[in-house]
Length: 94
Image (cartoon, rainbow, N blue to C red; front, side):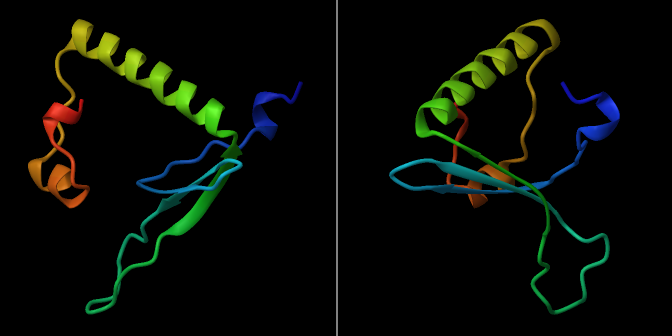
């Protein structure tokens, strides 16, 4: 088993989610601190995690349960309306 110092610890503020018939690839990225004016900023890939479709589906289910438990104990996790709109989501999706 690897020790804690050899396991990457990354921060991401973007996620690219790609699915195929055989699996899922999650590409975690972070935005540069000072994007150039007039240019679309490109995120810097921090990690790519690949898994089966089944693993991804179960992971989402477990994560949703964990987040709902957190909210029951600590209050709602607020998401800005414009973030939901950009992703085509609504609070009813939760």
